[in-house]
Length: 303
Length: 258
Image 1 (cartoon, chains in turn purple, orange):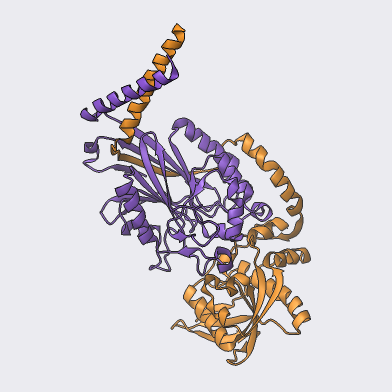
Image 2 (cartoon, rainbow over the protein chains, first blue to last red; image 1 turned 90 degrees about the vertical axis):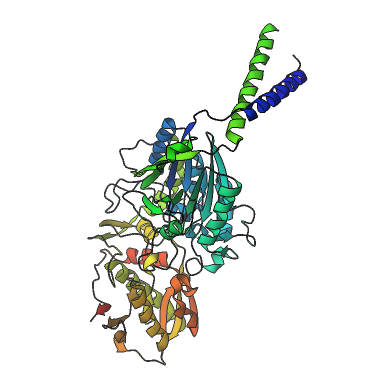
């Protein structure tokens, strides 16, 4: 058979199959399992804490994290590996190499996506830009407008992933920069309200893109007890809808288990944060089914 | 030739299969979450290591270790930054920043800095009990921030007390003391042991981050004089560690509640 014939015949069969399918129903049962792994505020901690460290003895370490991630990938190949910001700053690795090693190691571990934390501006927005070629994953932020900066067109608001028939939309959120980051470092980056940015994102990701799952990768902080009016992950979860999971950072919060919050529609949102310095790896497993009746009594959340 | 034909037939079926799979997944068929499980997994020495990652890190680490593992001093106890209004860690950092900045300021400007105010959030690590190295200084102060001296009127010194009382954080403070009364107002404000004078100019040393509006310490914007010392906060700590043998535990009260 000549190649051209092959293509033509295949195209014909495809059309036929397509036609046939459009009349048949999609009743066949389909399930899927997605594992979301996440870190936040790793702050250039690459080596494990020493055995005599008073707070986190023997904890953390990138080589160990990589092994843990590998073993989870063996278990389930449908993994999304995310970081919620503040990758930079905290050990001499950053002072000496400006973030090169952090991003190269995250690329080796096959991170899929990250958002920017305030400390990722510590060598200026130009310092961040100059290291981006070391990352083979993207950064997202929906409430930082980078139009008048070097990151224009590079950092997008969201990214969509397809994993084993599941369409996942992930968008990023950053903390207010004024008063936290020196203006000479963030330059013309414009911060906007995380709640409004999230509402825009879920409209795009849920209604237009019809994602099966929406994840918010946030560096706005888990909760501020002394500043009850300040926006945080717990408030964001309650004020929005259609977000399934908020992966947080900034406040270095160690949680005994992920927090369940009722959103504006009365539905459950999961909020998690994995402490800091690579001491913990967050793991959230989602099980999907195409049979809507299975969720008639609500989804079960085991935390 | 026969084999090739079979292969093509197989390929053809395979493409049809792929097309079918694609149609199912792109057919807008909604998938519903039925179950979620969530937890944080601690990373400990029980975890194996990926050798390739460890090997990749090695040369980077070796370069840094050569510089930073020099022992500079000894700390008989762990110094921590957690506490109510002041902490031994904050006291130490504010005291040494005031002392060492004055060495430069006295020589250059023939003036004396009265107060040091830093920010609690700027202390990034503890001083663990045991040997203190250059690395310890990098962990406490990883930022490249430098010291600046701002001339503030007495009025702005009063604003500093209001800021600290409102923030309820143990921001490192040296050279000044006050008490907080039952109405949350500062009383008995003393600068270098003398009562605060409204019209006097006081020299306050702090970091460029705070002068530029960091942590909303906006009183620094009202400064009437400004001097850049070009002295990194980290280098102040390193120079101090080189100078002393034993790190002291400084527990005197700068801020107290009536």
